[in-house]
Length: 273
Image (tube, rainbow, N blue to C red; front, side):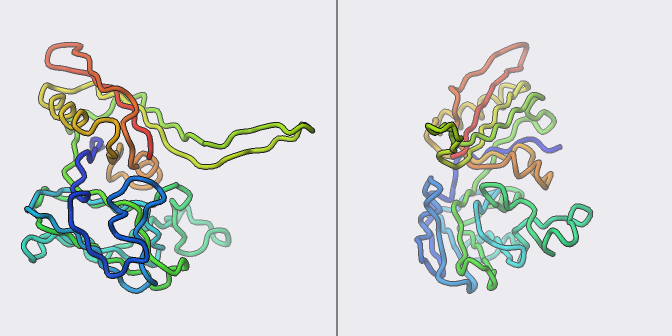
């Protein structure tokens, strides 16, 4: 199993953005908050481009909380001075219920597997590549919403601990629901409020001095106020990966314990934005 990946420094937030159309501005993909989204005019092909002032290295790009259906496609390209240096080609960005789990007569053919989660996302992990810009091409002409939409984009170089030592056993994921129960004068139960957010707690119990220094430098620079992207089980697919992958902020104070020679422990608590 591949180790967790944390994108702490989001290069997308420093890029200059353009979009084919903007019913809602593409700059919203650089803003934290669930109500900020880029939205297209209509369902025609849309191209989003991010350009850096100075070329920089990328090895991850995330398209977060999009509305592409199982019939839509997404294409991600890295460019260096106008030349394409990486290209996914058009890919299906929505997870489809696989055969063996898909239920005839109950699930629509081509139904998405993870639409009940609060965020539908697509990410690509690559070798570290020098790029001056990147391009996202979205196609979903039959989208029933009547528009294409993306909430947030993350790009950068993810942090991972030692590739042989992931988060320790004891990972805790809590779905925090904001609904509250209240009794009426007659004794009936009413539920007020709605919404949900994830809270993920885990321990990195096998950090050497190099890994500790890198983690501390990045987390302390970001602080509690900066959005980060966590993927605890990258490239495993399905519910396991999707449930443990989201945009969050650090909820606990950063600290670590030097428990034996050249080994440190660091607990992390991340709360979904």
